[in-house]
Image 1 (cartoon, rainbow, N blue to C red):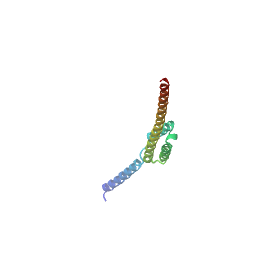
Image 2: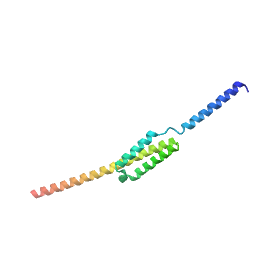
Image 3: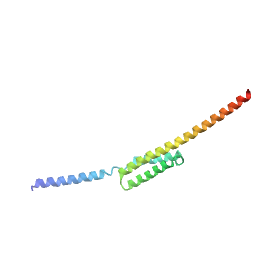
Length: 130
């Protein structure tokens, strides 16, 4: 084997090792700090909207997925952490939406009851004047 061929094989080997190393590191992804932060904020907003009363299952799922995402970061499983953080975000938003929906339904019911009370009062008043 010639010297040039040996150098070429050595350089090729080093290049292959470097490429494999880079792809190995890249497969972990990057730490999803923003995704975790967004999920944490969404969970807090859901709690503030009383999701623990109106959507406890969705809120619990969001919290569990957020905790799992944080654990995945500690294990440097960044792709998994990002997926879990995104799922936690969606679960938290669903919990908030359900909670707000339930509150709106209660307000609508209260308004209906008020209208019915006013209607009965109006009928009673008009009936007594005739």
